[in-house]
Image (cartoon, rainbow, N blue to C red):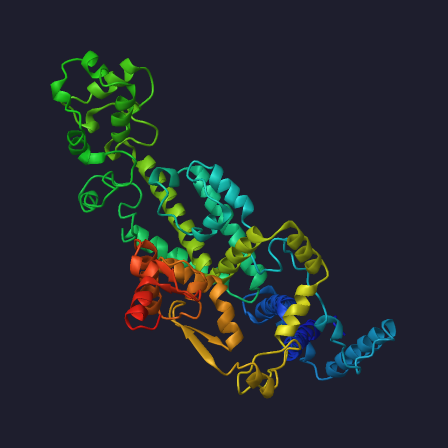
Length: 535
């Protein structure tokens, strides 16, 4: 039956409708838990890819200029005949073809409904590492290692690296244009794109990245991108002059001093006019000469004599007049570079800017995942070895999926906002009243934090929040301040305690006397009673 071109076209339409029906049935099933939702998204993505493949075939069929459309027109034309007597012969030829088809496939039952259960229960392969936790966390350990070992990177722990994942402002301009930095950005972008497509299979990420690339390229070419106003080449002219005021970019991004090099040389702490020979410059020392040469983009290696000669060559001359061989690699001024080198530098800068913009956009889309990853890293750092083993066994037993199912349980009716018991249900109201959980106690020292119930209030005096509050006030947290919740009361009590402890010997209050019956009084009380004749 599928031998004719029209029948093949009809079969493609039928497959397209069947895939749409399967997607609807899949969404009608309730997906509980993170893993089930992820599997469902991957199944729907697979069906949509199949639909797009079929739709492209049908578009070629209905395109008048395609080869498939020509076959379709020929077959439609063959159904009719200019000779009326040939109509019956065409009919019987088609009937014969149908009978032969059913003889070859006698068990084919087209009346039975197709079973979609296997496609609905299909479990696509989820390619996640153990550190990624089915798409909950990022696994950037290799990239972190590459960043800390690279010249453009710095030494930092994994948690700090995650926090500054899309912060490229601290990296120097020269290091950005180098190949290792571009390779690192490309690897980071590839991983983030792969992770996002695995966790969000239905998202249209390619369109967003294409839009970001187009906007970044347009802003770069117009010189409106912050930090890249010179479009990466910093040639002489008005465009370079307009950014002379930018701190740190006086060289207009070319790695060398440019047209303002003479002014930069004059701003050095060394006045070359005061030196009459190379020998006098040698008295500055090798390290200081190296520093001055580096500021001007000149080669700073060699012996002390060679460094002094190199710097002395600048006396009475501008950097444009120097030989290009005297400059360090990539540090020559724009006037000494060829047009091809300037275009190549601009293309490198554009590729770096485009990669940074795409990575920054992906970091925004994955902000919640990055935050969860940082929380997981902090948790693992505080875990003991036994706790890590227990967590690993729990993950192997697929307890995480069960936990997600429990979170997705039905809503518990709790209008009085009663605390939940061990079974996850609100405790009885009489028990709530018995423990005094309806009584609110506020502690000003804890930042006006509320404690419900007398037991929680008494226990909080030894908890971290109250201890930190007392430490901030400069007061020791001991039993003398028990039940004190006001800041003024605590300060007043602490002041009285200090005055009592720092006071000297007071005979009237500190000296004790004993009467004939053995009663002990302070001197002041003893003398008062004696004057009254009571002793």
